[in-house]
Image 1 (cartoon, rainbow, N blue to C red):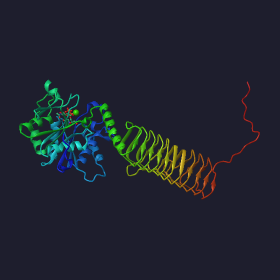
Image 2 (image 1 turned 45 degrees about the horizontal axis):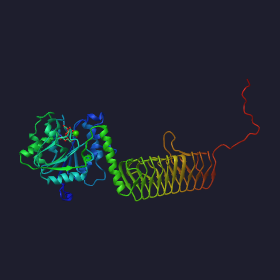
Image 3 (image 1 turned 180 degrees about the vertical axis):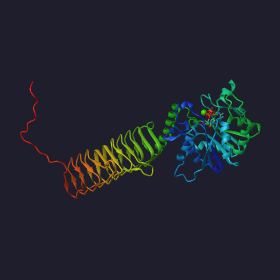
Image 4 (image 1 turned 60 degrees about the vertical axis):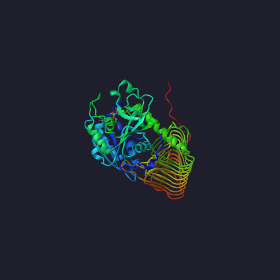
Length: 480
Ligand code: UD1
Ligand code: CA
């Protein structure tokens, strides 16, 4: 296969039809098959993404089984940052009488002068370059079939040729033993001019083993019309594997993750094990980033230069600035990509730290084991190293927040704020009852329960004074 010049194909008159009406019985799930997540997003959304990447004019999703649920998921898959978003519509196919019938329902929503590219909602790993090559092969006016030669062609429609010329696609259930021996199969993806497709589909009949209107019958009809049928054969079969069962879904998940891992490695990111990383969203890495095993990245995560992520961390919507180190078992979760948890330059986080929405750590902040931070800002150099809760607080520079201390931010009805000035030292096991302000440079004695604001530069001790009673006798147990 020659390497086509992908830039030369005019894609502006492309309509993409996505077949998503089928039931997916083998998933054994209440959730429609195309809504099962791969890398954290429904299978169907990966396919819609492809249409965006091809800059299609229009996307027509054919729904049927659990149509309302599938249709309701569509708004969430339109990328908010996309510049040219194609028109996306859903068309219901009821009942589902086969792939030809499905495409027929979609055609009224397609233009007359367009190329139609048919994709399946359960085939998530196709690369845009493959589809561009298929469109290129069609030259914008021929019927182009995506094919492959799997080791085991069972179940697929076989490509029947006479010499080099494609004559038909014969479905497994309708094939003669000789045809079943053909290795080249149809992948389920084709491109055709809209008007031709209309005319062929109007002639397709359900006179076959499955009593269905086969999309694949259009090949025979095109040949009858003397219309050119071309193929683009791919070797990388994972690109066209559909999801029919939980086992296949898990397999494709690993294939997807391996692709992401390889791209990260290519960009210089050091992965302890490329088979043990999961990216369910976007992971942007600066130079010299290293990531230990079993980390999960969700939403949008940015790792600055020289950042190290320890084993078993889960980061969702987080920005980590240069040189910060995240120790193992840290969980950090911003509420949205545009509202990330922020971890400043050179900060040390974890092991076993939990950063919740609204956590913003300045440069060189330390947040240690079993420390939870929520909706709080810790300024440069502040430290909360052990067993602490910092919620709804503004923590000044170089503050030391002692082991076991917490901000009591919730009175049972409302949340209140705690202000801690710069250079404050909060001893161990303190309770700061919000709303409260701890003046800059102050010290709070260990075990204090602070209910009122404290002046700058003072020592505040808010606990009962220690007394020792000499000669005090413990009650003795009565003798036998
Ligand atoms: C189809 C092809 C076969 C090809 C294989 C590749 C036909 C007749 N056969 O077979 O040649 O090798 O894909 O995987 O096209 N769908 C609808 N409405 C329907 C029927 C199906 O939307 O009425 C959707 C399904 O949800 C699925 C896709 O179309 O996403 C393919 O349907 P499926 O029944 O899986 O086709 P295959 O039998 O696998
Ligand atoms: Ca199938």
